[in-house]
Structures are given as C-alpha cells and as structure tokens.
Image (cartoon, rainbow, N blue to C red; front, side, top):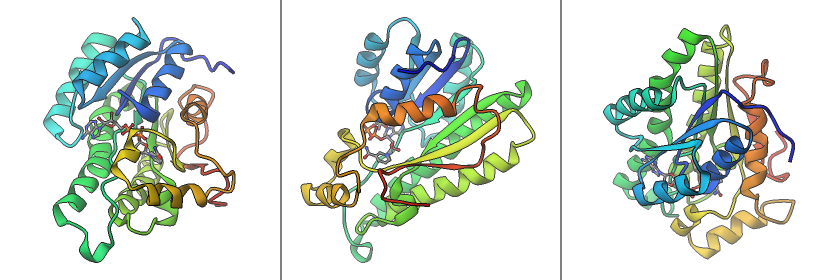
Length: 248
Ligand SMILES: NC(=O)c1ccc[n+]([C@@H]2O[C@H](COP(=O)([O-])OP(=O)(O)OC[C@H]3O[C@@H](n4cnc5c(N)ncnc54)[C@H](O)[C@@H]3O)[C@@H](O)[C@H]2O)c1
C-alpha cells in the first residue's frame, strides 16, 4: 500500500461506521490521520471505533438534521481539533421502482439524506476551513448520478445533484487551499445493497466492463490521494470509479 502522509490531519467521515466510509477511515488511520466517524447507527459506530483504535472518535449524528450537524461540528473540533478533511459518505439507496409509481415520501427521504445531508455537513465545516485556509472535501456521488439507473430515479437524481454541488463549492473555494472533489463509484458490495433486489444488483454488475464489483479498498485508495496535501491543484472535479462503465 502506498502511503500518503496524513499525519496531523483530522478527518470527519460521515456514514463512516461501515462500508465505503469505514474503508476510507481505516486507510486514513493507517496514513496517520485522526478520524471522527459521524453516523446515525450508534452500535455500529462503537464497533468501528474499537476496530480503528485510539486514533478514532465517533459522534452519533443524523446528517439530515442541521442542528445536529452544527452540534457535531462543535463537539468534534473540541475533542479532536480543527477538521481538515471531510468525506461525505452517508447515503441511502432506497427501493427500486419506476418513477411513475415511486413513493413520494421515500423519494424525499433519499434526496434529504444524500443531497441535503451532504450540503449540511459542507455548510457546517467549510467556514472553519476558510478561516484556516486549508481543507480537503470528498463527496461520494455515484455512477448513477452520471448515467441514471432505471428504477432508481431518486437515487440517481440525488447523486447528480451532489456532482453539481461539488462543482459549485469547488469553484467557490478555489482561491483557498481547499479542494472539493467527488467520486462516482460503481457498485461495491456493502450493506447498502440490502436495500435492492438481486435482479437490480445483477443489472448493475452486468454494466461494469471490468466484470466485477468495486472493492471498498480501491475507493479508499483513490480518496487517500484526494484528501492529501499533495492534491493541491485539482478541485471541483469528478473522479470515476466505474470499472470502465463511464468513459467521461
Ligand atoms: N456500495 C455501492 O455500491 C455504492 C456505489 C456508489 C456510491 N455509493 C455511495 O457511497 C456511500 C456509502 O455507501 P455504502 O455502500 O458504504 O453504504 P452503507 O450502507 O454500507 O453505509 C452507509 C452509512 O451511512 C449511514 N447513514 C445513512 N443515513 C444516514 C444519516 N441520515 N445520517 C448519518 N448517517 C447515515 C448508515 O448508517 C451507514 O452506516 C453512499 O453515499 C452511497 O450512495 C455506494
């Protein structure tokens, strides 16, 4: 494993109790960072902290709740120092269904977690990054946000919106030493897939020219560079992790 030096950095990883976020936390701890995992699943957070060891802290937070995100920011910085890295990985897929029958409350929930949650976290953490003139933000979008998956319109729309928001924020902060980028993974085998049918999962696998799912460590590897000081120029960009599905 290549080592990007993250010593002295303090990373907040939302949705970090498991899946892609947890793999990124593990990689950052191995690279010398302190990490604070934000997740709404308190029991899983405890397990994650035990596995990561003394460099990890946790805060139970629902990213859809602005007041909670603000409190979590204050608490996190008081306990672990200024936040220099943010990975927005908290997200939900929601059930697969055609748009013309999609449950309206479920649609709004998916947008709320994936888009508004990412907005809340950036809104809370960016002022401190601006004041210190340093930050690295990575938003986890999805190949669905580029291509649009059938029967996943809310999810695809939320991830396309995260891509757009990343581009806006990256440009807003380009005069600072703050990089804001997003990644667009294809399917990785995490618990988020429990929200989907086997047929839908097979559809997504069949669309990946590599012929296999993404490994969470492969996503963590790309993010390790994106959140490092070495990424001093690239911002407002979209990094592909689709195994050849998207060629743009
Ligand atoms: N796994 C994939 O195939 C895949 C592909 C592309 C993009 N993504 C995206 O990657 C991110 C991580 O997905 P994953 O596969 O690791 O899923 P996961 O289900 O393993 O982890 C997501 C975590 O987010 C947390 N979470 C959900 N809603 C939350 C909320 N309101 N507040 C705080 N935490 C919340 C969950 O408790 C969970 O621990 C998501 O944004 C997902 O859309 C996943």
